[in-house]
Every structure is written in structure tokens, then in C-alpha cells.
Image 1 (cartoon, rainbow, N blue to C red):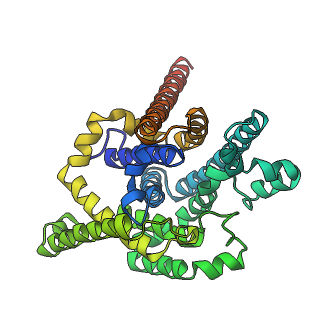
Image 2: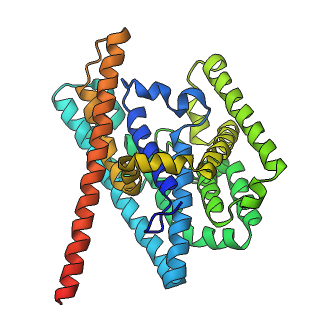
Image 3: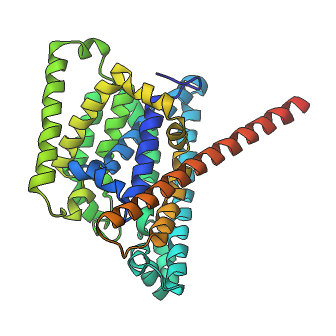
Length: 368
């Protein structure tokens, strides 16, 4: 289903859900985070976020290409690269300022360490330079540097994917397979510097692009093969959930997420296939129409991501951590509801402001 502005309401809904989940996942005392994807799958919201980013980028590129030509489409993503870089710098500044305030007030010491304020305070000029050149990425800003790279690559990947999906996928898989030596070559293999190896995570981005420009046909979805694939995917999703819940009870090494391990890729693919069947049935559109505030969050993705970093820091600091058991769950749930409400209000406020700006511009044009 498409909105009147040509946007997919399902994609915006998924993006809104993922942005909310990212905020909750970064509140250590969150209650709802125990019910999120990472609790019963080898992958988590990061894969969904990057995949949807690729899908939305391909949709935007092809729309501008059809309406204004190739040069305009390329310029749109060069500008987008600059927008993401500015958002990254703003996120980094907000993270460091939050860490500094917490340090001065002697609050939430674990979060002070996570923000990276302590090493920054020791070497501010060197750290600022490292942040500016993407060498050092404070806390939640770490996902944005690879988006800067991905935005630059869109004008090259999308045309290739439109010409030959197999070639685009093959090159992407090859880069993913060589991602660790490539990261070492470019000196971004240190977990403390790059939480996401872009040479590995581009695979999720390319998956999203391919699903937009070369989607599985509706004719195939009605075949017996597709129905068997759906059954296999459901079984695989359940199998991964059992393994995660009852076998791998200890946290896995961070390097597996950093370099997008094979089990994460497979688990995401089977979940994505099952989700696609719900989209085909209209279930996601039905849900999105009844939760328009979540769709609004998805449509203001970059703003909500940046604001969400601050929301998670504030809620975690304001939430008491001395309670255990049922009382602790209630306190955590209260913090979750505050965080969700804050993100919904931020998205609504930004959307209203943008609409007012658009109306003012239209009135100015009419008067002129």
C-alpha cells in the first residue's frame, strides 16, 4: 500500500517500530526490551534498520530519477550524505554533553563511561578530530558513519541492481565475505572505534535495495514453492528462537554483530520472508493505519534517531535502579512508556513544524 505521497505505509511503520525499539534497547533498565527481537533471535533491530534504510534509499533514488533525471538523483544522495554526517556530529555532541553533565552531577556512572566522556575529557582536541573523521564514534552515534558511506554508494548500487540483481548481490556477498580483512586494511576493525563494520553491513543495505528494485513477483508468491519457503521460514524462525532462549543463554561476542555473522544474516532473512507474507496479506497496513503515530516516527527517521539517543540517556538516568523483582519491572515499564511517549511527541512536533514551513513557503510563493 502506498500513501498519497508515494511512500510505503508498511515501510514507514516498520521504521517507526525499529526506532522505538532502538531507544528501548539502549535503556539498561528497560522492561520491554526483554521482549524485543534480540531476545529471541540471533539478529536484532540493527539489521532491520539498515535493511529498511536500503529499501527507502532505493525508493527515493528511483523516484527522483523518474521525476528529475539522473543528475538530480545523484545530487539528492550527495546532499543526503551531508545531512547524515551533520546528524552524526550532532548525536556525538549530545552524547558527550550528556556524559559531561552526568559526570559533573555524579549521576549514572555506567552511562558516563558508555558516552565516552572520560577519554574525551582527557584528550579533547585529539578526540574531536577523531570524531570528525569518523575514527571515533561516541556511543549511539556509531551506526551513522556507515550510513554516510552507504548514502554515497546509492547512486552506484541502485543502477547496478536495476541492471543485474545477481551481479549486485554477488559483489555484495563477496565484500561481506572479505569484510574482516578489508576492515583491517582500512584500520576500522577495532570494536571501540567502529561498532559496525561497513564492509559487512552493506549486505543488509544491498538486500533492502534489491527488495525495492527487484522485488519477488506476486506470481511467484502464489506458487507451491513460495508456500514451502514460508513453511521453512516459520520453522527456522522458531528454531532460532529456541536456540537463543534455551541454548545460547549468555551474551555473544560483540565481534559477531560488528562483522554481521552468517547466523545473523540467515535469521534475518527468514524473519524478513515471514514479515513479507504479513505485508502481502495486508496485516501490516491494517496495523499501521491504526497506529499513525508510529508511522509518523518512521517518516521522521533521522530526527527521531538523534532525539532518541538523548531520550534513552535521560530516561535511564531518571529511572531508579535500586529496585528488583516485580517492582523493578514496573519501574522499568514506566521508563519505557515515558521514552515511547517522548519519541511520539518529538515526531509529531517535527512533522507539524515541517507542515507549517511548507504552508508558509506555499503562501509566500502565491504572494510573490
